[in-house]
Every structure is written in C-alpha cells, then in structure tokens.
Image (cartoon, rainbow, N blue to C red; front, side, top):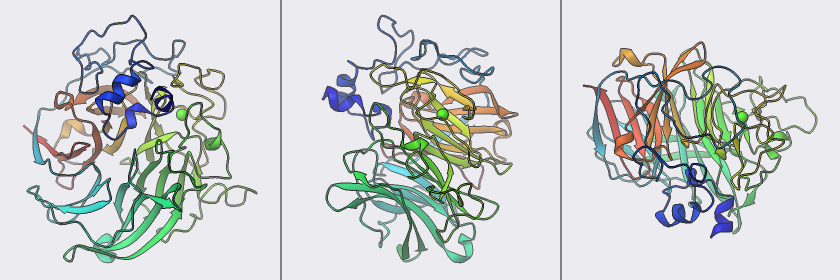
Length: 431
Ligand SMILES: [Ca+2]
C-alpha cells in the first residue's frame, strides 16, 4: 500500500478513502513532522484556512523548505472578504460529476465520471442518461471527463468531450471527441474521435491525466490539457516534443492541428502541441481579454495557476515550487530557470486545484476581475482577484461545506455553479 501510494497524487484521487489517507499520512501529513495544525481541519484532514483580513490563508510552512516566490504575491496573497452570497443545493444525486456547460432555459449538460452525461434542469432535476456515448475506461482519476460546447452550438449542436479510452485490455489514453447533441431525444449522434494522447500507456497509470477542454472564444478552436501520467520520480515526457503527455494541445473544431501552432514545422515534434512542461492540469479557461489560463497540480507543494502562451515551457519536472512525494527535490531543486514560465500564482502546501472560471457576470459586481479555482484537497472554492495578472487577494468560499470541488462555472445568469465529487451541484447567488 505504501509503495503504491508513493507515486499517486493523493489530492487527485476521486474520493480519497479514509484508509488511503491514513496510509498516506506515513508519507505526507501536509506539514513537516512536529508542526501541529493551529486550525480545525477539513474533510480531507487538512487545516481550514486562516481568515484574517490582510493576512494569507495559509499558515503552515511550505513543503519546499528552500522555496521562495520569484515576485511579490506569487503565493500567499492576503485574505479579503468580498460579497455575501447564499448557496442553493440544486441536486445531490449526480455520480462523481466532472464538468458542466450551460444550455438554454437554465438547463445544464453535466458529465459523470463513470461514463454518463445528463441534462440537469434549472430546478435540479436530472434527465435520464444521454444515449450514444462511447465506452469509457473508468477508474482512479479518469472516466468521462470534460464537456464543452462548440462556439456555434446554437446552430450546429456540436459538443466536444474528453474521456479515457481502453486500448486492448491493459492500456489506455485520453481521447477528445466531438458529437451532435439531440437535447430533446437525449442522444449523441455523429460521434468522432478528434485526437488521442500519445503514447498509449498502461491503464494502471490513472493519475495526472488532464482532460480539461477550453474553447477559444475568438475562432472556436479547441484546447485540451494532457497530463503527464508519471509516477514518482517523474519522467521527462512533458519536456519532449515527440509525445503529447504533459502538454496543452490546440486543434481546429474539426480536429486538425491549428495553423497557428508553434511546432508545425519542427522536425520530430507533434503538430498539435501548443505549450509544454505541464504536469497534471485540471482547469482551463479564457479570461475576459481572451487569454487562456490553466491550473495544474504540483506534487508535494507547487500547485500552479498559469497564463498559457504559445510555445512556452511551464517547467515540469525541471523546476517546481514543490517537492516530489517521497520528500526529494525535483530536478536540481530550482524554482525557476531561464526559458521556463513562472506560474502567476502557486500554492505550497497544495489545495489540489480543479476547475477554473473567470467571473464575467453582472450579478456580483464585487467579483469582477476575479477568477475561481476549485479545490479538491482544500475543499474550497478559491476566489483570486487579479490585477495586472497578479493575484492581489484570495478568499476561500464554501470551505465550511467540506466538499471536494471538481468544477466551477459562471452561468449566463451571473450565478456561480459548482460541482463536488460527492454529487452536489451548488448555485451561488447574492444574499
Ligand atoms: Ca510549472
């Protein structure tokens, strides 16, 4: 058990069983030996945030003893309370929900990791499972993952979705597909696989697989984040251009490498690659200025919020603001190197960042300029206020509900919608 857990990101396990956490505690208590938690604990056994205006939420020492931010407020931004809100639980009946998108009339399209997609009505009632989905390899962190609507969905009813596919009996990879959704008939038609992550790997490697999709609001092209699937110590796949592990990929809506991609004419490089050096990306979203951001899990420490640029290298596993699971340095222990992008923000210790959504609505004026980050291990919805691409304040919402938050989206009505691993769909509105 101990050996098996060493290379697995405990923060990312679908629903971390108490036994797994107890066993992992031998390896990783979330704080250095001898340092006792000062606050009450969340459902994952980690301290709740410290809520003092102007002070950081985190009070524990970082995992990386010699770690440091490379610019002010790259980590531990001050807490600031913002707008009062009320939380409505629309349903608790979803099965390991992973992603949601908004259809018309307040309805939502939701994926469930075991391999089903449903429509949730505005009142929270669930449709039957949508028919016509391909077979999904469900287990660990994977199954049916993200869903996104085509930029012209109102006309063409095309959706994009990602899932883990079994290859033979022992191998798997992440797949991006498109289909046409018949909302009234609850069926998918014209299902096409657009892209498969390469190489295929043993299906036992169920961690750090990525799968989050973001649609470029300018041209409707499709980005997907592909995790590196590495155990500990990490391999160098994310730094190599001959595979799509540890990468952001960028395709046209028809599934071709996008003509603006950086390595189309680089010998030996895969043409779908947009950026490299990622580990385990769980959130992706465009900001109001039309720029792509992502969140990714570090190992021990070093969870990141990144602004994604064409052809950039995000450093994994050469540089990190965290350490490897057994407590060893990653690479030579550096937090930065020339030619590698620094995260715009990082967490050490980790929160297990998941879904990502910029607030673009009008319902909460106080949340304009903020981005929301779901927290799995942190069991919180982090609100980060950005000014000039720097985080100037951090506020943990919903932490008292003790839920592993998987996805967050801002609805067309300006409300904030949140999915939790244990089946909840929550709606946040002004109080
Ligand atoms: Ca990085």
